[in-house]
Amino acid sequence: MAANLSGKVFIVTGGFGALGRAVGEELVKRGARVALLDRSDSAGAGVPSATLAIGGVDLGDEAAAGAALARVREQLGAIDGLVNVAGGFAWETLQSGAVSTWDRMYEINLRTAVVASQAALPHLLERTGGRIVNVGALASVKAGTGMGAYAASKAGVARFTEALAEELKDTGITVNAVLPSIIDTPANRKDMPDADPTRWVTPQALAAVIAFLLSDESAPITGACLPVAGRV
Ligand SMILES: NC(=O)c1ccc[n+]([C@@H]2O[C@H](COP(=O)([O-])OP(=O)(O)OC[C@H]3O[C@@H](n4cnc5c(N)ncnc54)[C@H](OP(=O)(O)O)[C@@H]3O)[C@@H](O)[C@H]2O)c1
Image 1 (cartoon, protein in one colour):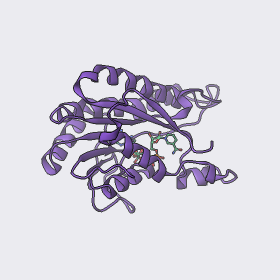
Image 2: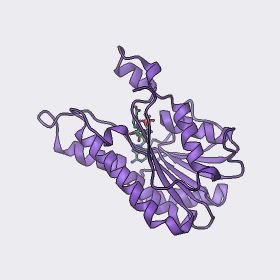
Image 3: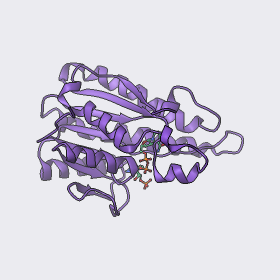
Image 4: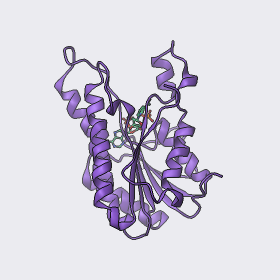
């Protein structure tokens, strides 16, 4: 039976993107109240209307993240969990690429998770059994050509997950990560027209795994980096 999240309050960063929207939908379906945070000003079509959508938040900015979290606390009540979905991708070889790509990947993928988690912690500590779920990537385990900057930033997410899980072990807050390979998004279908998307994990299936990691049932799991790769 699907984990029941009724009455809980969750924040999803990168909430206007393909995975963030699916996570928002899944959590609402399971009875949670959900805030979606994102950088763009407008939520756009497809963002679940039952969520609190807060745009214009650069999660690399500590003050902006703190203010957004405080707003969620005020509007939805005490916060039970944070899902760090915000991120991005770049494929670039070292020979043809720019060093600035490494900084950009770090900022988008790791810094956003660190800043949002630090802003969320005082709120999560108000409750028992808080949850943080980070979205890493399977490429962080073994990177192919052109994946260096992206994979290094996602390896940072994995190590951050482990370190924070240890730091919070005695608080009852768990910290875990999912490591997708390729998600079946419209962007990936467009970029890889010859691939077989039935092998990829769907945003909905990944959202269901994230929902489990947010549930009370996942309490004994912390510091895990869980591959969710479909048949890739
Ligand atoms: N798609 C895949 O195959 C795949 C595979 C493995 C891992 N992942 C990871 O899964 C997550 C979601 O992927 P997705 O396909 O749903 O990507 P997406 O559609 O691009 O969504 C990511 C969202 O995060 C936002 N974001 C980025 N930086 C931000 C910041 N500093 N502050 C606030 N919001 C920010 C983006 O805003 P902008 O549009 O303004 O950048 C975007 O709305 C990412 O972490 C990605 O690395 C994806």
